[in-house]
Amino acid sequence: MKNMYSRRDSLKLSLLAGLGLSLQPSYGFFNSKDKVRTRPIPKSGEALPVVGLGTWQTFDVGTSVEKRKLLTEVLNQLHGFGGSVIDSSPMYGSSEKVVGDLTGQLDFQKELFYATKVWTSGKQAGIRQMDSSFNKMGVKRMDLMQIHNLVDWRTHVKTLKDWKAQGKIRYWGITHYVDSSHESLERIIASERPDFVQFNYSIRSRHAEKSLFKTIEKYQVASLINQPYEGGSLFRAVRGKELPAWTKEWDIHSWGQYFLKFILSNSNVSCVIPGTSKPHHMIDNMGAGLGRIPNRETREKMASYVKSL
Image (tube, rainbow, N blue to C red; front, top):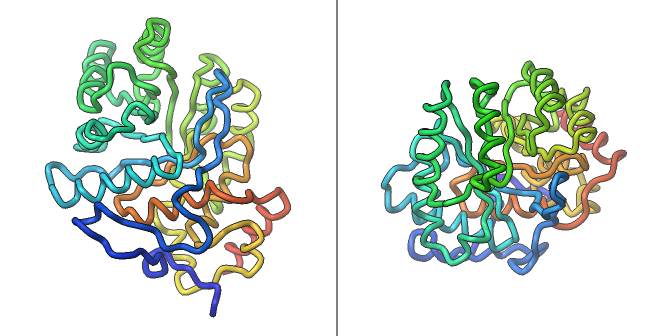
C-alpha cells in the first residue's frame, strides 16, 4: 500500500450520525485517549496545548443548524485530544457569536482558552468592541485579547494593560499575518512586552526565522501561528504526492500533520491555530501534537522535500 494520505479522501471515519454529532476516528496510529503535548506560556508557566483552532471563515456560519452541529463536533474533537485554544475576531463575521453559542452548551466550556481581538480605532470604540466580544463569546474574563493587525495599537495597548491589571483579561497580545509587519511586531514586543504575539509562519514562509523568533525568545513572549497551510496552497502543491517513507519515524501520517509538525519543531512556537469546519480535519490537525516532533536536521529535510516538489 502506498504511503498516501490526502487531506480530502484519506481521512477514514466511521458512520456519521446526527449530522456529525457522533464521529469516531478509525485511525490505527492514534486514538481519542491521546492528548496533544503542551508548552508553557513564558510569562506565567501555564501549560498551553500546541494545537488550537482558528475561526476565520470557518465559524462564520450564522444560525445554520446543520453547520453549527458540525462545528460542535469540531469543538468536541479539539477538547477530546486535549486542545483548548480558540482564536477569533470581530472581523470574522458571526464567528465570535457562534463560538459563544456553541461552547456555552458544552460541559467543558471552562476548560477552553478563549482568544479574540480588538479591530477598530479609538479608545472608546475599542472598549465597546471588546465588551461586545465578551458578550458574544459568553465569557466574563477573556483569556487573551489581541490587537488585530496592529490597528491603532498605541491606543489599545493602554487599555489592555489596564484590563490585565484589573483581571478583566488574563493575557494581551498583538497580531499580524504578513512578513512585512514582522519588524513592527518586534519593535512593539521590545517596547511594550506583550504576553502573546500572533503571526504567519509555515514550511515555505519562514521569514519569522530571520529575527522575530529570536525577539520573542528574548522577551519571553508566547506565539500563536496563523496561516500554517498558506491559505490551502500547501495542499494544492502536494496533491497526488506521496508522503516520504521516513515521515513514519516522526509519527507523521498526513500532509496536514507534515506541515504542522514542521511548525511545531520550532521550540519558540507556543501554539498553531489552523482553522477548520470539518471534524475529521480537526482530528487530523490534533494528530500533529501527538508523537515525536522533528529535530532540526529533519525539519530542514522536510522543507527541502516540499521545495523539490
